[in-house]
Length: 438
Ligand SMILES: Cc1cc2nc3c(=O)[nH]c(=O)nc-3n(C[C@H](O)[C@H](O)[C@H](O)COP(=O)(O)OP(=O)(O)OC[C@H]3O[C@@H](n4cnc5c(N)ncnc54)[C@H](O)[C@@H]3O)c2cc1C
Image 1 (tube, rainbow, N blue to C red):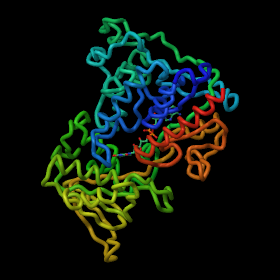
Image 2: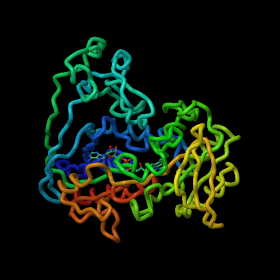
Image 3: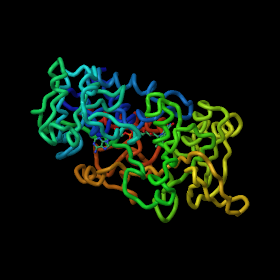
Image 4: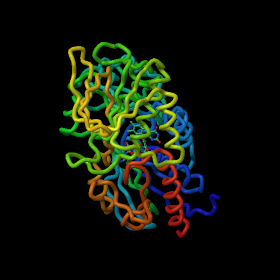
């Protein structure tokens, strides 16, 4: 197929989550050169943070990891990690793009990810990948299976870069891979035929807001968010897959999952995050697989299980995993003397105000557009919708207002992995048309 592509033209993919990865792989397999610009130290996006994935409940990283290494090894794909788009000029068929690559302070072609530097590093800091539920070192691997599989130095936390002391990592590295002289650099990508925006999403808790205060998040130790709970369930996560309360280290016997936190009401975001009905049931199922004496309760406004086999999945939750679904509106979470969350809710079927004491509460928080989306949209000249997701054409949901710029995955609306992947193949085909036209 290689001979069909116009070799001088490439496609730029912004964001290396599952959507960006799939788009890049499809294009690369057609013989088209692709540059992935990813702002984190590794590609993988949110899917790398998940434990299992609905609808099959397969291990998330087991599905993702082969795609990560395929991307890394593919001769037609270049991954630019810890990088951001800085300037875009031109038009469909011929964009030119400036990319800012932040210093990693580690030579990517020398580091073999042996981890000795991290063992020796004296600085312990909150681990962002594990949602601050454990510590990592100032020199670190973003996550275990991350690609590129090289260390990164956290410039804000490194003792040498902040206080001109230490340099222990440098002394411990037998391959001389540490390079404190590295600088941020700007490079340009010319002859970019098409651009794909696949910058994914953030979550409500990533931004300052009052909504979560009502539920005692960050105040009560036994109230966590759904993504934190994914990390707690995960065998490579901070609790090594043994779910424990943060107040006393005990395994919870009663867990409440609260849906629509920060979505679908006038005080917060008005839209539906669309995936929480499904992932909440998934999280409850996995927790039950860890401990089948567990009682779980899902507080929901209504169930939105529109995908293939999704309704059956929820029914299976009730039938085989002891999940009790409570149609309700949760007003607030209180706490008792043992730091047990008490869910105060209106039962929609009876109209009564009830209380349920549990050991742990999990909040399914609203999906938001990714941090910095306004700046990115401004650089690209694409429009945003009323919620700041990328605006798309009503009957062509992968097309932006700008010729040659396409979008896929959660950056234009919340969606699950299967849909992100199918959209990714859709944008790859549209971008390929532009390259082939030459
Ligand atoms: C708690 C929870 C559980 C879930 N469970 C499931 C499940 O079981 N099954 C399922 O199908 N779905 C699940 N999902 C949804 C799933 O996470 C998304 O469908 C999927 O991650 C979307 O992929 P994406 O590539 O669009 O976005 P992301 O995974 O967010 O990837 C986007 C990438 O773009 C990068 N980026 C952002 N901005 C920029 C920028 N300006 N420049 C460069 N790079 C940038 C980010 O760093 C990231 O790597 C779950 C979501 C949550 C919150």
